[in-house]
Length: 317
Image 1: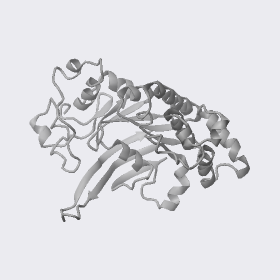
Image 2: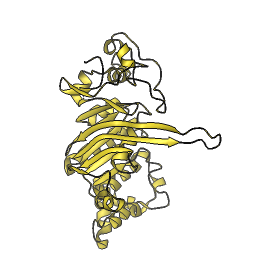
Image 3: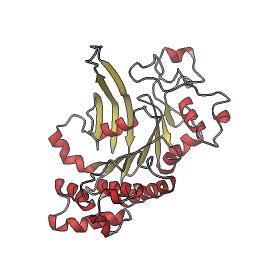
Image 4: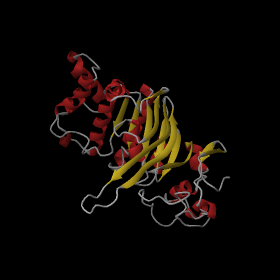
């Protein structure tokens, strides 16, 4: 349904105060992935790896520097804003922070009616009925429609955010760390809600998170992202049970109880993610990789099919 080809997003910064040369932030640096109908692709990586930027690029909330985004085989990355508005209702987003994602001056009814008006989803006489239906879908009662966002808890606000995303009857939703700001006790409720809605409406998700337990729970396929590039992709169960890329192993080793010694062969992952302004030569991960070789410092590995998945690493020539 969604296919991304060699997608890039570079931000140019300029310090006019001191007259410095412009710097280029390589937020997304050439990635490829697909999301099938009714499928969930989990996108994992540390903060600063480019996950959220990727989600916003797919929805054209940010304009890509280069590359293609295909919806049902049609390139939507270069069409005009006017043409894109016609398909906007098919592509929606659930934002990370439920406290800032909703306008505090609007009632929940107004928040949910707005997309119905813009995209002409139902006739005006059916607005209230549709609002009540959406609230019921996400487990809230009719009385919620007359309240303001500040009257709800974080979990309830995220349910309202999901209801707003569903209001246009979309086919594809980007979930940008939708449970990271919520209590652990509430996270499972929201995750189960998204999975139930997917089964009911045949939705496709790009699910962005840094919590591997969450990704394993909701994803069919998983893509591991590091410094603007995807370093490993594969079936969720296979990837978690038998990781190949050292960065994937390091992420899993960081989960309590997984056993760093076993996954990394007794070696430790050290250092922090480098700056996306000045990328390391060769493999971007070689500055932290416990298995780094000379070739890793010179040559960028290509994402290649290996044992039923794709991995970009010189350990698998």
